[in-house]
Length: 589
Ligand code: ATP
Ligand code: MG
Image (cartoon, rainbow, N blue to C red; front, side, top):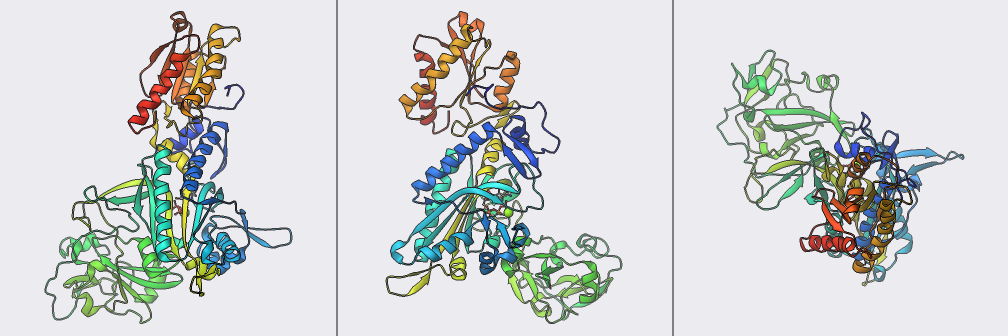
């Protein structure tokens, strides 16, 4: 490609609303442009890189035995009502009406469509297993689209759906996808690692997310370097000890605590009740019903766990206006020992199980209760793991200290079971003549988010540092004179014509070459080449030409001078040597 023929609108400065480095570079390197919040146009170079990511995904899905289909972006709401997600996923659904007043949904994902297809097309165990995938636009009404392609309203996702006869076979399909994902991210030059994950509104009972470590990631991951345990903080557990047993009094005892409304205040003079001897009482509204949550004073409630454990679709902290009529006191003096209306469920964190000699609010403003034995004094409806794991806690598997780091979720694999197949009647006739629901799995990769994660991981002060496999062009030829008759331009044209062909002959791989034919100062061209991030730049100037050489500069390595011979053997060999070197090191050139 010639630079003047395409469109690479590089920018010196990123627009103000770009906060993280990969978002800035997507804009500065002329890869994407914003049309509206969370909605972007892919410019030629951005699209090339995206297509390469998609192609890697496609090849690995095909290799894993999945077959490509393309489902509609317009979906009828009826199938979403049938699965129950018309309500549970309503916060992300884009809804629109056609001219006849009929409602449609823009596909945020496609479990309902594929399961409907399976219900119609799959009838016998002989047709199973099947795994269908597509790479297509998805639409989600994200409340806070941000960070460019990371959280967009419209994005490209690969979604795959497996159908099996038994749980065991479904597990095998899951493992194949898990392995395919590992290969996909490695081929994209990404350091991504799998973590145990919550299943959210998708449902199902087993899932892993693939995470790219990054300070700017929206997820937190707890992990153990010693044994390899890793889980999204929304799901992570640790081996932290339960609350130590102590002698409690014969009965809970009320004491005055005027003006004390925080765990911290109660831990100070004159009360001096350590946070780990306090029960924190939180009131939430879960699916429009109040619930009481008890966790230890020094712990934090994990809202994702709350939803997962209680099965609620949505939950939010109750307001003071909702709490006072319910418990008779304001936040700060709440507890679950007295005055708890019978129908209100009380969910307590496992860490409090068996705890005694605890202090908690008395449901009377300005008073607390001490000597509380939780199992004696509180009607606990259910015990759940509800707390958020902290850094340094012992790993639940091996006891070594857990670490926590931020990460970007690029992919997600779920074992769905029969949740969708039962609701949408995707059944098959088994060997024994009985009809059974297909056992399903679903597997997503955000192609556009992956592209941005590659940049978030691969950049330096000068711009993008692309891995060879996804670079829009791998080599940029930069002649410093561009008049057609100039020796620099003539050599540039020759390399442009010969190099990719030779490379292909030798390696079987394509090499994508850009020729910067702009009549610009060398400084501008070099800066742009670094900003766009081509893995290699070949510059042809008068000085080097006089010596019969070209300069080859790997994006992050030292310049090498390569002698020009008639059939450009040295230049071609340079790249072949780089490829071999990289292959031997298990890396990308
Ligand atoms: P998140 O928690 O980040 O919202 P999710 O759990 O909703 O993600 P899935 O439904 O599992 O995501 O979608 C599969 C993949 O699609 C994700 O792993 C992610 O890479 C990508 N993805 C999801 N939402 C978006 C979005 N708004 N913009 C870009 N990519 C997205
Ligand atoms: Mg989401």
